[in-house]
Image (cartoon, rainbow, N blue to C red):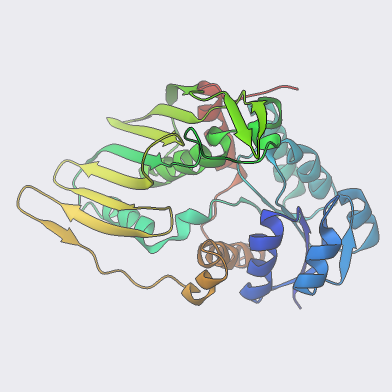
Amino acid sequence: MKLRVGVLGASFGGSVHVPSFQAQGSFDVVAIASPNRAAEVAKARNIPNAFSSLEEMLAGVELDVLSVATPPFEHYGPVLAALGRGLHVLCEKPFALNVEQAQEMLAASREAGTVCALAHEFRYSPSRNALRELVINGHLGPLRAIEVLYFSTMLREGNERPNSWWFERRRGGGITGALASHLIDQASWLAGRSPLRATGYERTAIPERSYQDERFTSDVADGAFATIDYGDGIIATVTADGTRAIDSNSLAAHGGQRTAVASGKTLVDIKTFVVDLEETSELELVPQPHANLGAAHPNLPFFVTLLDAFAAAIEGKPAELPTFEDGLQTQRVLEAIGYTTRG
């Protein structure tokens, strides 16, 4: 019998969460909730129930899983409500608005005893998995440093984005939560351990923005920069900058003998190389599972692979997931560089 899923949020929830759950095979999306677009998405995606709020959805339909695809300021309450009902939970990143919220949600998940995971789907790309395997098997030699870089033109001067919660610090907006949370998770996952300490900062280079002749002020970061100490001589540097002249991203693991790099224009379109003093070799990788789904949305293959692990964990099988514990550790790093709000 398939697990009954309710999706909270109709934007990324409608374009990625819903089709991913529908494609994976172990789930049945029975409801979606959103104040504005639930009915529209339900009709387009053949979801039998649409609600305007989480409260209505929880009262109106039986669920096994809640998928939280809302902005950061709407994670804490829904996650606690779902765990209070004994549901399994998949929550979008960033986990919370502050460390205290993350701690409470983690404690609630332990009390509920259900399977809880974060939507760090990019862990499931073949390139990133290849880097991690090279680190684990010692092919690079002792791990010395990790670099995670994300450069984007999306927030540079002249590029327009509509005014929304994304440009409000109090609601968890900005590039730190949107992208740096992914990058910090990748660094910790690659290191195979939790951060011991972190330092860094956010910066807002372009506070005055415009969209269709409307001018508004942004108080969120358009760049985030962190240095993380994992102990045993392993240091990570993380950069997420939306004001660059190019689109480029890379994840590099530097060992005592070799360096491995996954890089490309986007988080999805990347190639993997191993470099030493004598040569640079491009790795041939096993194709991405569910690669055929990428035409509908580039994140779908990674997200469905994440759901493969989520379903396995619910069935009691061994599975590696981005956990709420991981989310708390990332939240500590985010707070160390300035991403936090307490309402």
